[in-house]
Image (cartoon, rainbow, N blue to C red; front, side, top):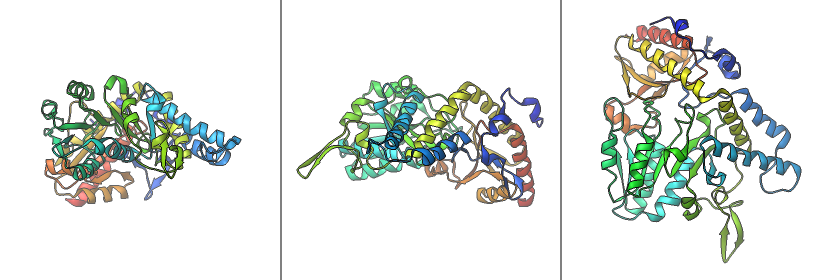
Length: 414
């Protein structure tokens, strides 16, 4: 299967690519093939222009001035909250806490929700396939509280053993966590089924949506989870942006995690009263320009539509998987029945880092290493993998260029 043009889906990817300035550059004298989207996505000009426009025309701090610029900055910042609430179908904009990313959001839940209620003998349940951001914060609060962290297993295909996960929802589990989509395997987990099991047992569920929102529509009400965390830089938005969505009853009960300006109602040396959620969790000056860009990113997704995005990315994944299987000695890590366009693999006789370095010289950007998922690497018995992660602005022709480069590099290493 090598005729990429015969399989091109009905998607005007060339018009879309024109919106992404970086995709037109060369690397080491070769046209860039950017297959590191699970790490960070490229940004369309609409997002870049939104950030630029903020600094050129609206730069001021939020909620601290009655002058025109301050009102405009506040409007842009709060507009991003509204956009995110619609993006994940939150019941209320006040359930959306703006954060610097998923790591910030998970730590907020760990220290503000989990730590105050954990005690010795309690447990937090996560999975073997999680990113470190959905493991390490739980270990930190578990150490401080005397609780433990348990990890549900997966199978060789990279699919969560859901029945085992549910069996592990024992009475000592006070919080359950799961990634919506694995950053290494692309596996899509059955979040609704897991959430139903958690609700039956009265266990709150946190879902890491970092790798889901760039590829599929998310409805937190339909999913039935308690917390959903998102990072902006993987979904076309600037770095330093993200979101925690949480049910109102949780946010009302959670104490502030950071203290400072903007999250207070009144400060006295005898004590401080805090603002209502979500603002009591947003101390200090935020990344205002970044969130203006995030709102523009959400608009961009809305314009394209996830139906079209998913059709194109499914064709990319199918084609790329088939082409990689043609390469002798190549082993794909993770072949779940339901997955997003992420392919991790190994090549006999070659180290992942060496492959990535040589591919870079051919203009191909892929990721090598443990992908912030040490437990998953340990499960597969490997120190690292090479990861090609695709996005809607990638093409079948780029897949061909990637495979040609990989074959060339393979000859050099054999």
